[in-house]
Length: 342
Ligand code: KG4
Ligand code: ZN
Image (cartoon, rainbow, N blue to C red):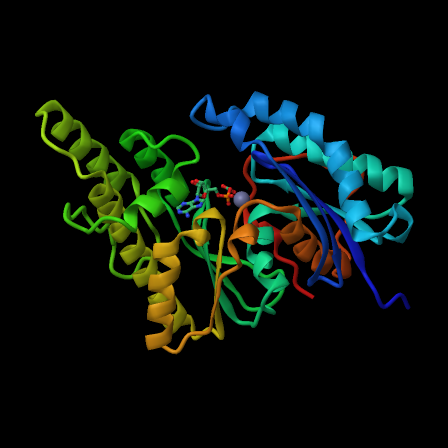
């Protein structure tokens, strides 16, 4: 039996073209990430058509670089994993077609990976996942609490009813005038301010693990517009700190309560907003007090990358999951449908 598994993974769901080689599900042999941020900056956000074109331009060289950096050839690769969705459809299809071509030409299995499963498995590259676990997903498109009793077993126990947390960050950043990508800029500014504006905390029903951020987002935007209309001074750092405190308090409160009620061994945090300094600090504090084992990937593995797709792809490969050449991309797919029970 071949004791080493090498997965070549491709991720192109949004504005990063990324290819990685992962050994045995945990070891990153290479993780090439070609970011499009500079190109999208002038539009103030990701333009899907522009994103697809950049993926087309970059995908072949990114594959070559990933193989070269890992010092492996396609012959040694066991399977090709690729993000199937959710994401921008045109962007996804570039990665999917490249992965299909590689799998077909080199006669390798093709493994479809759910993008959010990838974000969760980013943790596994640094800290082995310990089951049962609770995953807090905080990205540009998702805010979810997912209970996992084992590998590849996903139960969504709570989700946002409107905006994703990253989306709220980006809109608040735009209204303050910080530009794109907004999340990291609000995070940085928040560190210089204090919670003086007292924005609402939206808890929804007492027993619900669902989230809602659109009311908070509107409260921040309305406050800024009102102050501007009246010609009153705005303390932007305080606005950022007040918004961030409100977001973090609700995220941490609901997550800790979910961890206690589900009696999990580990809390893992995933997605772009997991690199938020305020969230990381408050979660660490709360987990310490509540004796919860916390795992958060280092910032470079929080944002989109193919290494995380390779880590999840490894387990899917060993569970016998594969797709044929009709594999399609989807802008939305339910992660629970990707549950594999052995
Ligand atoms: O997971 P991700 O890279 O892409 C998606 O799958 O959506 O997340 C991107 C989101 C963006 O909304 C970005 O503004 C936000 O993550 N983000 C942050 C921070 N870094 C990235 N939000 C708050 N604080 C940060 N430090
Ligand atoms: Zn993502």
